[in-house]
Length: 135
Image 1 (cartoon, rainbow, N blue to C red):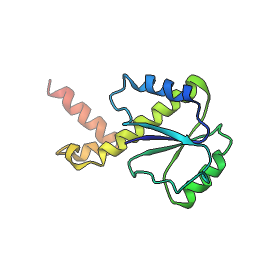
Image 2: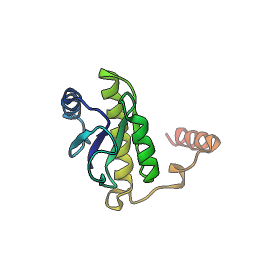
Image 3: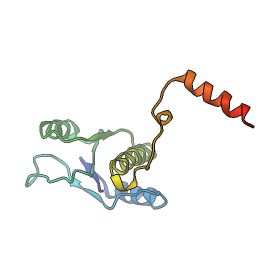
């Protein structure tokens, strides 16, 4: 899974992201960048597992959004500057990596009880009261 940065990207941002991901459990295989506008060069081929990240502050951000929507590709928009931008990208990457890992059958939990999917607070309170009585 790659992190693909779309829009005008400075090398300093890429270096800062590499540093920020150096201690992460789930880091991108590669940080791909260099596409400022969607009309640059040949058709873009993105891997289905890649996180396409449009930089909101970039000059051609709206053009990227329209391009990706027109091709029916999922993407996220990163807002902010400096440290805020890096943290927003890290957060988006973490959620993306977890969602992709959850979709892989070889690492799914073998058993999920009904309680793992239940959103009923009364049920949760009953289970809690029962567990307190057993002690």
